[in-house]
Image 1 (spheres, rainbow, N blue to C red):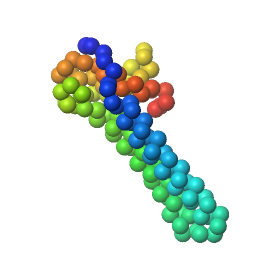
Image 2: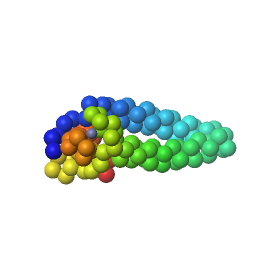
Image 3: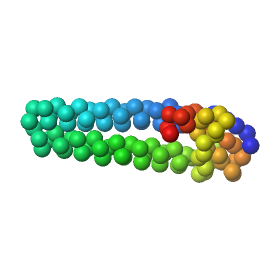
Image 4: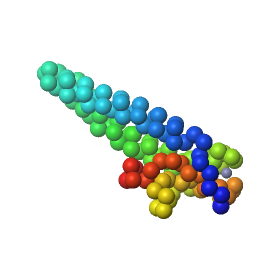
Length: 109
Ligand SMILES: [Zn+2]
C-alpha cells in the first residue's frame, strides 16, 4: 500500500462544510430575530429549518466522507480512521493506494 495525499477532497469538503454552516447560522439567527420580533410562524419555521439542516449537514458530511472516489481509477474506496495519524483515510484496493483525506478525526468525532 502506498500512501498519497488526496488531491482535492479536503479543500472541497471544507468549502462545502463552511458554506453549509454559514447557511445554518443564518437560519438560526433569522429564527431568533423573527421570534424576538413576534413573527412566531416564520421564527419557528426557521428554527425547524435550522434543526433539519443541521441533521442534513451531518448526514451528508458523513455520506461524502464514506463515498470517496479514488482519484486514479474513479473506483469506490473504503474510508476509515487512521488512529496513528489522526486523519481519515480512503483505501483503494484496486490501485493499492491509501489516500490521506487530510481531514482530522478529532474534529469529526
Ligand atoms: Zn483506485
